[in-house]
Each structure stands twice: as C-alpha cells, then as structure tokens.
Image 1 (cartoon, rainbow, N blue to C red):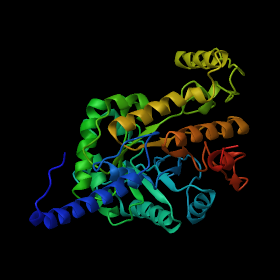
Image 2: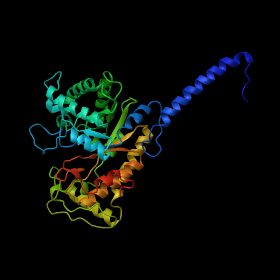
Image 3: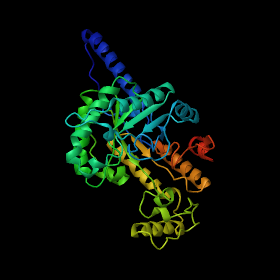
Length: 391
C-alpha cells in the first residue's frame, strides 16, 4: 500500500512527479517512433539514434561500376549525373549507395591526402543526392591491398576516414559512412573488430552526428555476424550482403571463376527447372549446382534460398538492438527478365516484412534496374521493387 505524503511535502512531490512524467513521455515518444529491425526489435536510449537515422536508408540502389573502378581499368560508362539522381528519386528509391575506391586517389604516407579532384567528384555526387531529396551512403570499396595485408594498410584506411569525416561532417544527416566493403580472408573478424572500433573512434573525434555502418567479415555475409563486435556507438548500424541463390544471381558472371559457363538458370517456382553443370566447372560450382537441384527436387527453391539468411540477420539485429541494412543484393542481367523481376520482388518483400532496409545492386550496370538502351526501368523491375504486392 503506498505511503501517504504529509501535506507540506505534497507540492514538491507533485512538481517532481510532473517533471518525471514529462521526461518519460518524451523518451517514450522518441523510441516508439523508431522502426524495428526485424519484426519486433527492441530499442533503447543507446540505439534509438541509429534506428532513427536508418529511416532515410530503406529502399536504395547502388551506383555500381562507377567510382569503385580502378583508374587503369574500364568497366563501361556507368558515370552518374543530375539526370540519374532525378530518375532514382522519381522511381521511388530513398537513397543511393556510392561504392568508392578512395585508396586509388591518395598521396603518400603518412597523411595519405585524398586528391582534390577526386574529392570534388564525390562531393558533386553528394550534392546531387541532396538536391533530389535522396540520402547517400559513402563507403570504401574494393580496398584489396587492405584485404590482403590489413596491418600495412590500416593507417591508410584510418586517414581516409578522418578526411571523409572532416569533409562531410556539416552535411545533412542523410549522409552515412560505411567503413569497408566486404572484408574477408586475411581481414577476418579477429582483425576487423579492432579496425572497426578504431575507425569509429577516429570518426567520432571529428563527427559525432552521422550514421556509421559496419559489417561482418566473410564478404559481409550473414554467417559472419556471429563474430562481429559492433563498436560502442549509438549511431552505428550493421550491414549484410546476400546474393543467394548464387547460381541464379551470378550466372554468366565472367569475373567469378567457373560462372561464365553457367547459363539458363531459372529463379524457379518450387519443383521446376533443374540445372546441368558443364564438365569443366570448378568443384565449388558443381556443389552449387547439386545444391540448387536439390532445392528444386525438394521444392525449397525460390524464397527459401535467401529467407533463412534474412531471418537470421533480423534475429541478430533484435538480439543486439541494431538496425540491419542489406547493402547489396541482386541478380545479373543475363538471367531471364521475368525471373529477375520475380527474384527482386520476393527478396524485397521478404526484407521489408522483416523490417530490413535494403539497397539493390545496381542502377545501370550488369545487374541493372535502369535500362540505358531503353531509357526506362528493366522489364518488371519497378513493380518488383515498388508495387504494393510486387506483382
């Protein structure tokens, strides 16, 4: 039974209670408006800022094969300008992910100063995104020298991020920083957890406001989440990539050993269209073919190829109270147009059902949404990504 207060203390306790009620109401309003990562993610004062910032990064597209291309290579003309940003916004995307190979455009140690002309190119992209009401993710992409030898390239990565944080700290909160794309091999979890912690600390000495995105090793794969230690920062989200079923999404890919000879792989309804492996493919491709055919035979093809991974990512996000961002998923344009559209539809609907923000690969390159020749969305793609049911 509550203890009755003496009359002389009532006024002060009333004022205190009123203040506490107001504070509690405000905190509740702040956290209740935050979207879930997964069906029922919990939010706390420590992570509410990350969830709030992630609201700007829900339906995105990668401007792939553009600023991440090494300067001595030609991956086709995939440069983007004002028209591209206008079209992206008109189609219904809310943000762009801008893969960028900063490491090719720095001066020597110890400062690793980014070349002004390249900095200007990226700033122009950020300004175009802002002009058209789009958020933008800036990352470090294809830093192969770091992946091969993290110890020798660690300070270069840190200096790059110090410069980026300085240059973009006054930009709107619709700019996000993604530390490193797809660490793997030598840049495993034991290395990356420490690297991510230091990178976040260095950025926060300069910029306390913007969203930071970190990801697991194993190519940002979902199975790498179990070893990821997220830096202690309340404005940090976690990214994963998913290209399952790989045999379908990468059929005919000339940059992946053995996949150039894999063709006519369907994104099937359960129980249809088995695949034959050519005689000369590597063993890992043959295993992929066997796995794919088992999924057809057991009627677990289609959505079951990627749904468990997305569910695992969403569950990890709930457990660790972090927003999850699917920074890459997609299917190559050598697949049948109707199958690509069905895949993107199913993947998008599954991700959104689980409360996961996403960014498809890519805008107008090999996995394109926008068909440059037709000057229109690729067949079925707009309905797949923005239709009410995806159909």
